[in-house]
Length: 442
Image (cartoon, rainbow, N blue to C red; front, side, top):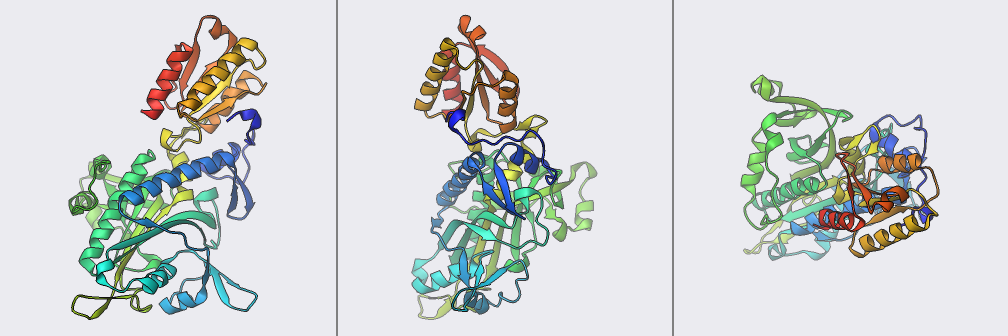
C-alpha cells in the first residue's frame, strides 16, 4: 500500500479525552475515531489490526473443534424472558421496540439465541458434543464508557457456546477452550493468565478470566509467580485428547481476580513468589450447566429414550479490546510496537527523497519484491521531511522499517530498522529483502 493513496490521519497532538496509553496512541495513529460516547469508527489502520486479531481467534477456535456461524445483533426480548434474564440483566442492555411494538434488544451476549438455535435442530445425544461460535458486534450501555475501546459500549466479541450431554463431557469442552485461549493470546505476543473469576450475569459455578498484566488494568489481580513461567501448549496439541493435565498445571498455582481473592490463601505463599498487579481482561470462559437449557427446554434424548437438558458453557474473547491490550503491552515513548502476527503491515518502506530517480526506482523494486513474496508493505512515497517520516513510522509501530536514501544507494546499501529492538543494520537491497522475507514468512 502506498501512503500517498492510503487514509492515515495522523494527529500531532494527543486529544484531551485520552486517559491511557492505548487510547492516546490509537487516536494519534489514526486507527479509530470516536463517533459518540463509547462508540468508535475503525479507520483503515486500526481495522487491519482488528482483522488480524479476529483471524487468529478464528483459527484457534477452528483448531479446537468449534464451528463458526453468525447470529444477528438484534434479538427478540421473548428469548430473554424465557431464560429469566430480560428483567434481571440491568440497564446495560439496550432495549428497543420495533415498528410493530415488539420488544427487541441489541445483544450484549448470545446465550439465549444460541440455545434457541440448538433446540430447533438437535434432538439426540448422538449429535453431541457441539460447540458453535461467532465473531459479532455487541452493545452494552456502560454508565461511564472510558479508556477508548477498552471500555466502550459497542465492541467486537468472539463468543462460543458448548453443548454436552453431562457435566463430565462439558468439563472436557471447557478444557478445550481453556487451552485454545492460552494458544490464542500467545500467538498475539501476549501472556494471558487464567484466573478464577466471578460468573456475573452469565451464571454458572466455574469460570476463568484471562488477564493481561498491565499498569492500566481496571482491576487488581493476585497470582503465584510460578504461573508466569508455564509453557504454552504447542501447535501440535491434540484437542481430542484429555487436556485436563494442561489445565490442572495452569490452575494449580494461585491466581484470582479481586472479586475471588482469598487473602489467607495468598498470604500463605512465600512473599517472594507473590505477584500483585493490575490486569486487563481479554477473555472469559464459563461453565453454567443447565441454566439456559432447562428453562428453554433444550433437551436431547438419551440411549434409553429419556430426555435430559444439555449442559452448556460459554467462552468470550474481547476481539476489539485485545487491540488496546496489545498496545498497553507493546509500546514505548515513540509509539506502538506491533508483534508481527497482528501488525497492520509488516514493513514500512521509507523513501527519503521522493522524486529522485535512483531512490524512486530502488523503492519501486523493493516494494514489488516484498509484495510478491507476501510481505505486507506500507510504502511512504510522500514528499515530506525525513524526520516526519521516521516519527510516523515509529508511531504506527510496524515491526520493520526499510529506509532508502540517495547517499546509501551510492554505496549500494539501505538501512533496516527493527522497531522492537531499535537495531539498525546496513545491507544491500537484496540482502534486506531476503532478511525480511525470512523473518516474516519464516
